[in-house]
Image (tube, rainbow, N blue to C red):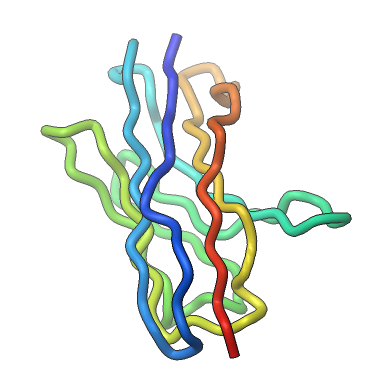
Length: 117
């Protein structure tokens, strides 16, 4: 099994930056991609970005050019660098690994990002 744990959230003014981390543990060699999601109260969890093991990046339109997903393979840690933050980016951010066979890991506790206007 693989477990993930998010960190790095906080309060930032609009236009500012934050870097989120997602530390994976367990059978990390089974990870084929890592996704970031976000969720605000009363809304569905929303896909934000993906990085495959082969290095392909995918982003939702609203974050393209502002967010960057990356990884440090030696640390089994993935990152979501968020620049030019907007109040609409306020949410709890989660990471989830896609494993060989196509299943997702269980959700971590998430990390709160709050962007003030």
